[in-house]
Length: 597
Image 1 (cartoon, rainbow, N blue to C red):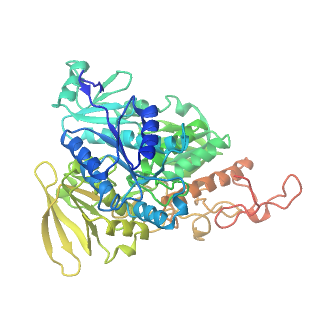
Image 2 (image 1 turned 30 degrees about the vertical axis):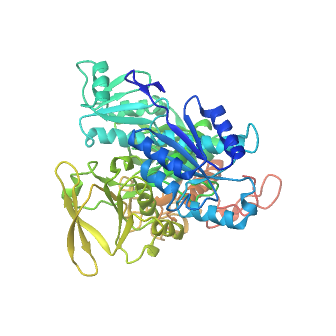
Image 3 (image 1 turned 90 degrees about the vertical axis):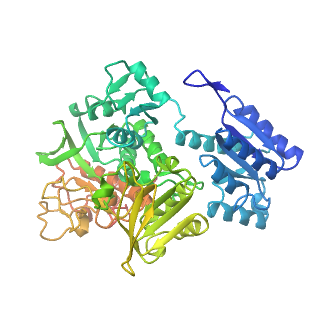
């Protein structure tokens, strides 16, 4: 047990391992106790039936289970067996297959592991420890425990938010800190914890309340106070930058990492926080280098840390309102009257999910109706009915994440088939999850509730029939609208508002220079676009990350010519210093000569 906030003795979260054979189980138990017994209660059992009984007892007692390791190959350990029951009893718990070191030597076992992980029956696998200490084993276990602690808001330096209701300004604060990679927790003012925070804040405190890790209390904080709490530098407008990046989604973060690594003075501004639309992805399974999968929020947080280490500065809760050229520099205006100057800019503003446009549902935004994925809201639907509107990868990931908590998840797809917009691996996982129902040819046209969502009205596109269903939550992921309305007229867009770049620019776009625009350059010289905001972008995280890195390479080419506007076209660039032929830029902006990363 450990001391809780209210001076109560709280039971330690449980790490449970199930293995057969005294030697094998003993090795696992010894490693777990040696490394984790101070902060976790280690339980090791030799029988899946006994383990299930123990997990049921822990659930009835309201105790946390952080991680369950279950040996393969045992029949029914994953799909339909022990690990599936773990998901029902302890939806927050991480679930891993415990496999022998030579797992890939036995084809049947290897196929079973791949099938279980691929279908969502287990989160991933952990190789049984082979000696002491086995740091490969501990790396895997620690990774699971970090993910669990992050999701449960139990990591240190947590910002506590106290509000009168789940919706309104308190909901906005939770959204902000979720997007800014700041660990945070929320409680209602009339809860025991809320009353305790209010008592410490004093009689003049106003809701919503924000309690910082250092003990400071902010009453109904302004956006500027929130930005400062999230780490924004106070004097950012007193510096002239090499590049200002507008937007902190995958493309903007990638540009910040590569720009910082190249020694450029980089400022990233975003009206919300980091991650953009990627934060709605609860688990990205097909991103290079993450075989276990990675949540969009975790990927964004790591990229943010990486960019910060390289020296990039970030300003959250500051909306960019204007962009103009001022001589050889660009002037970037922010809401609130502040302005920064830069030699170049990258527009990585991405896009947001389109709204349903149903007034009764818009009134319930944050009270059962959510735009984007359910990363932080999923625990609130435990044992309830949740609906997801959308047919793309983000919608599929949202449905699978919700299935860990909700009694039933219904995926509403306007198209006639999931194949129209979703990756095959997600379709297979959805089909293998018994309590996810898929309704194709269906759209949300109405709904409502007293104080929070209670019902939805659905329309069948094939018959035109309307029906009303009970619903506890709705997550909407139905296409995107680009953030480009604030840009000046000389930045050319397509009919939907997405930015045209490079060869996409029409002849009549008034391009002012002799050289042709670079592949990611907009119709305003020195201003590039990357990620989902571009007209022809591939709406995938990996593509956005790639464009962010390419944009920095093009920025370096632009900065090499101090005049920015008088540079030679790429095809007639000057020879290299060593006399070798110039490196040409392809239509994709990649260099044709081989380079080291």
